[in-house]
Length: 439
Image (cartoon, rainbow, N blue to C red; front, side, top):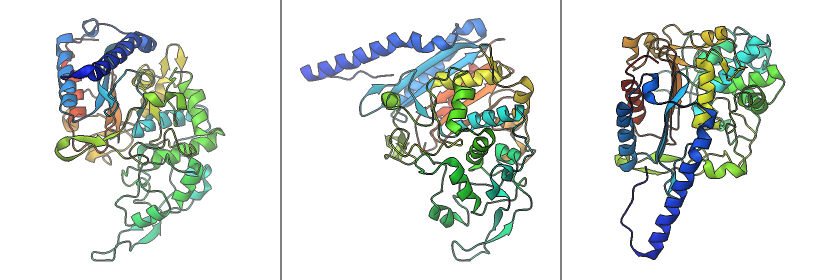
């Protein structure tokens, strides 16, 4: 929401007119943007318009308090968009209003796309869950695991042992390969020296296969299958997909997922003509007031200018609310959308069933092939239903699918670090409080 301010002078009047014109142009374009998704009144699918206004109020409040620059919320029930609103701005300095077609860096929300790609290959017999990663990346035939140093040992001092078994495709999909992002590992200094530390890989000059092969030389944090460790698993999976398919990851995504689903604005790197639609990244500072994040790296990143060489299936994609919603609707519909089938219903069932036992979240939540899963309402402590699944992003975005409620919900922003902001949790709660009947 753009707040009017007291303006004096003809110069400020011209600015006001320019902003008003910009808003008018955006509002005129909204019906066109939303054409790829069907819409309906909330009441027609068992939701309450009056209750959704609570969500408006909370989103606007956080923008007005400058705790976040801007957000988009989209809620779809029974295949119909009932809520699709941008709030605030996509760039504070330019006072550019947030738009429905704003492009976001989606970081770990990329993992869902990579997981879907892997299962497509499974359906074609080119990949199996229990295949060893070394079948496609021989460097993973003999991996090692860190042995933590004794108390009082010099920093960076550690030993390694051979992994008890080989890492499998299932291990990568479920983050049980023992592979972290290097942060906090006794071998962190070696990760840094190798040029691979942290989830951001979009500035790498090497291909994802080369990066994955470099990773294989580093010691991992746990033995395969023994612990849930969040890290480079999905990036390595992307390298496996390239080898199994014989295609670069960006082309596989485009031809097998993005084009069939009409995801026209999802890619690893933006074309120059779309740079004006990419939201600016902000950071939560002292007292929660946001500041613009630095250029490059985990701030603004290298999604337009840079090497454009490393396709990070774990955290490298950019997308829009509409594009990502189309992919989630495909999952909700059992692998099909608008007559185009990407996956079979049984593949979706396999992906959204927990494979981790008590390894993830101490058993309070499950983890499937790329998704966190609600298995028990009380233990999860989340609004939703048993069988709901989803994930989030380092840029403070999140999504989930609730098959029981026939619900898809997406909250997008560009805030890292988020400073403990609670708006994402409130978006989920306020979505569910607006459900008053059957879909």
